[in-house]
Length: 279
Image 1 (cartoon, rainbow, N blue to C red):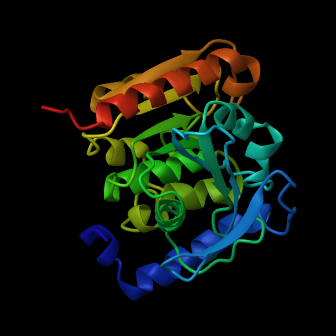
Image 2: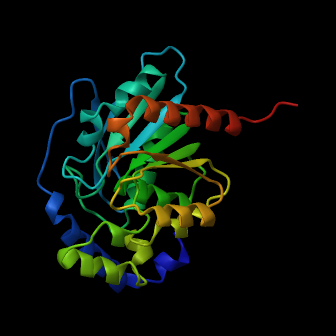
Image 3: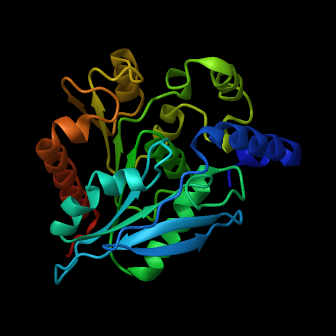
């Protein structure tokens, strides 16, 4: 855990938990069983959160790796990814697929204040269930936001990451009502790191040894073009790909074939790059 997280102390952590509980009220209470094609599980995080998840195994004889999917800030949680059949594309190409609900979504309980902890808890399970296989990440919107902050803490367990429709700052996403005021305050305070509300460029600029690609719609209200330009400048190892005529979370819907071609091609290149060179 970084010094910045530790420096918040017990009062800061308590305040962070309270803030997140309030923030999650609008998405809590919606639950759904995993579909028959998946095997459900519960993983306990370091902070005590019980994280609901689902595992889908490819039928390919020699699996290429595991894709860990992180859902957006919608009440459907991980079921958004299953409903839109993200797993179908990856399973067909030889990847096992893992989805899960962040704390506060679905049946996942609220034990702590850091969503990045949830990513590491599920990654630990993936490493245990699929030893030796590369772990690729794909995070949509807020799921990618949490991934960005997780990578700043430790990118070693992962081979690559795709960030899809991820707002650069929470201030561009929460633009109305009391949450707008709260987000503006907390994202500029010492609680920004533990609550995961600091901008993603602060985290991504420190990730240098892992391939990351950033996908976004050029008509995404939450992702201004100027922000993407600045992100690319500050994170020079980041690959940026724009999709025309797409609003928030429409990249995989309006350009599905190209979307998965980009993602799968990126995963394949990352796998080659991560392999040790024989001498």
